[in-house]
Length: 313
Image 1: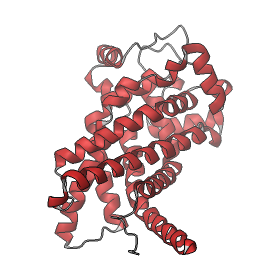
Image 2 (image 1 turned 30 degrees about the vertical axis):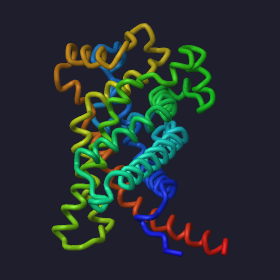
Image 3 (image 1 turned 45 degrees about the vertical axis):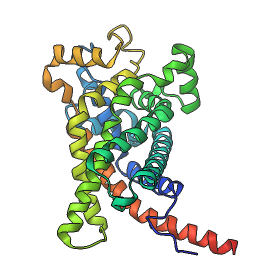
Image 4 (image 1 turned 180 degrees about the vertical axis):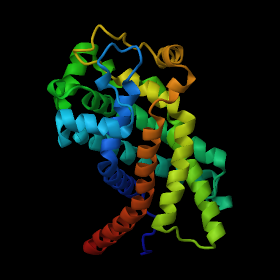
């Protein structure tokens, strides 16, 4: 029986390795995730104390630690890890499966090499399927990250509150901008594959080192984040719920277009990119760590598959 390699590892193996790498990366950069989410929902017209607004990532960290302690930097970590695991497992499974099926049916003559356009198309298809499945976890995580400690609930209670106040559809709030943002992982993974091929060619090697994978992952994620950031901010504001103290002081957003229109009217064009530096830092670090750790976890997954096959003999 032929040995299992990265090329022959089944989609579920890639999904396990990808989700494990993503969870590891998120755990390391989670305080930045909290900060970028809270900055994204802050608006100029909010009639709240200025101390509630973060001037920078460091200012946000200091304010959260002062008010909530170190644990405040990890509010909603459980649901966020669950969301990251489910999102990345679903995405890597769908992407690997769709890519494998496409290569088998239409691409054998080219040895499995895909054009940039097809990489983006397959990535977008996998992203759309993933978004439809995992948006409820994203909504719950946003609520847990942005509500004050005294109003914060666990995952089940948050789901129950959303359903009671907004109906089941509330769990899919922000689904339209989320679907538009399917282009983000498509750009990320599509550009990663192309940049990776270029780097391997320039280095005249067939093996991507963890350091090189980190650099290529950082570059590809930066590109994707800059292109899609306004919709990232719009999606977060759509999923956000004002605290009890703020209710009546801010008007609920009706759509992603409503978010973008109100932000540009009140804060100008650069309001669309509020908090982008923190978003990029968090996204680049977590994505680069994911790409670096996915290769490592993939090797462990291959080893696990080999051990299971040997155990069955």
